[in-house]
Length: 267
Image (cartoon, rainbow, N blue to C red; front, side, top):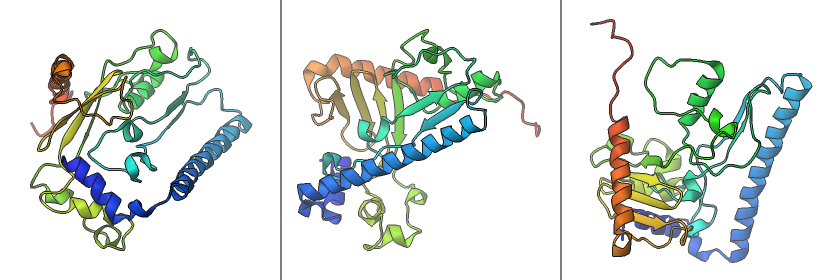
C-alpha cells in the first residue's frame, strides 16, 4: 500500500465515514454544490456591479479556485496535499477579457496551468516581467488561434523526510482529535507521515505521478478517467511511461534554475 492510499484509509477511519449512509453522502454533495452555487451567485453580483458602473466592457475578469475537494469521491471528503486526482487538480478557469481583445467564446479543454494567469495579465497590459517565469499567455487560446496550449501540465506536493518545519502542528484545530482538520493533519505529523514528496505530469490521455519514497502511479485517462487502476507495472504501458518520465525530466530541466535579469546591487 502506498502512503497516499494509507492516508485515504486513515482519513476514512478517523472521520467515521464508514458509518455514513448513502443519504448522508447525498446531503454532503448537495451542501457542496449549494456552496458552489452561492459563489456563482456572488460572482454574478460582482459582474452586475461592473455593468452598472459602466466598466464591464473594459474590465478583465479572471475566476478560478485554488483546488477542488473530494466531496465523497474515493470515499473521503476535503482534500489531501500530495495526491493529484483530477477531482483536486482540474479546476474551472473562467476568463472574460476587455472588449477590444479578440475572442472565440467557448469551453476549452486545453491544458492550462495557474502560472499562465499572470502571463496573460502581462500580455493584456503589455508588461515585460523583470524575472524569468514559465507562464504562457492565454490570449492566442482565447482568440481561437489555437485549441492547444500545453502538451502537459505539472503539479507538486508533499515534503521530504526531515522537513519537520512543514508539519502543520501549531493549531488546536489541527493537532487534537476534536480539531476540524485532525483526521488529515494528524496523519502528517510524524517523520514517516503520509505527506511525502510527489510530482504529477498530466497529458490529455495519461497521468504519471512520481513519488520520492513510495510506488509511482500511472493512469490511462481514456479508459480510466476515475484514476482507479494503477498501470505503473503494466508492461503494455512501458512506452507511455518512458515518454512521461522523459517529459517530467524536461520539465525539471527547463524550470530548475534561472538567472536574475538584473545584477544584485551588493555585487
